[in-house]
Length: 67
Image 1 (spheres, helix red, strand yellow):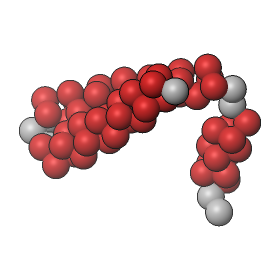
Image 2 (cartoon, rainbow, N blue to C red; image 1 turned 90 degrees about the vertical axis):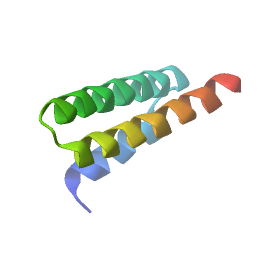
Image 3 (tube, rainbow, N blue to C red; image 1 turned 120 degrees about the vertical axis):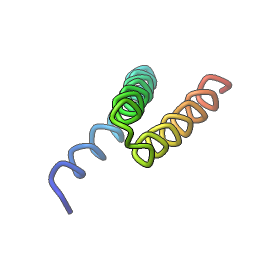
């Protein structure tokens, strides 16, 4: 397994609920910024992928906040 992926998994599994929420917010913001940059560069495939990933993260945030 890639060491970066292993670190990411460990970080997620050992995070507190508050830290997980922050990670989700950060991930959503990162993907929206990537979508914006990609759209400005007329790279619509990457922009679309980033938007879809941001939506998935936001859906997860909604699910977490309903608990």
